[in-house]
Image (tube, rainbow, N blue to C red; front, side, top):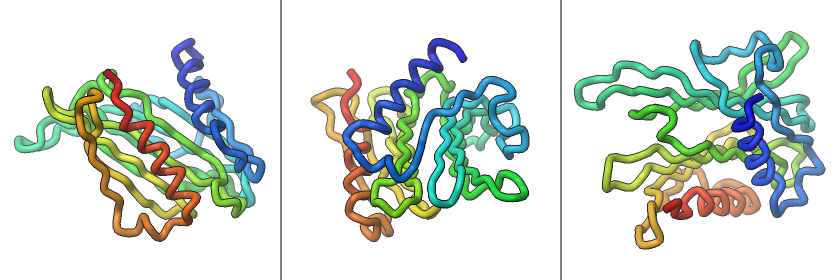
Length: 205
């Protein structure tokens, strides 16, 4: 593991542990990912680079959440080249091996280095014994325009979302819009998602 990877893991671990006493029902920890440390048979995108990996043990067993970046597709004349593909996947260990429960994909029309690290939060935030997964990231926008912020919540393996414009400076205005199903989430999950969105939407300049 490089020093940069170690710093990123420590940063995300602080996010996962800060301000909550809910992690006693699950055991979540960053998973090192040099060659050979993750299961060989995970269905990861070809030519992908793992940026983060997490392991959780909850009442359903062991889960893995893996974030990757890989070369994107050429795109179309109207949308431009999709330079980088972002993929988030969750796997569950079964008696026959690792089963993929869900996968979320997005595209970045810029080099990977232009995007800030994803904010990933895992834990049992409503006390039901099952790990909840929060994924937050911002896609860089064109010059003089806001970045596009996205926060995905996977609750009992169902997807919920917050999307909006991310402020660049204290004088900018951000926006926030929830998916139609978001307000059906337990209050504790909604509150945790809004707190993570506020962290994503904090001006970085």
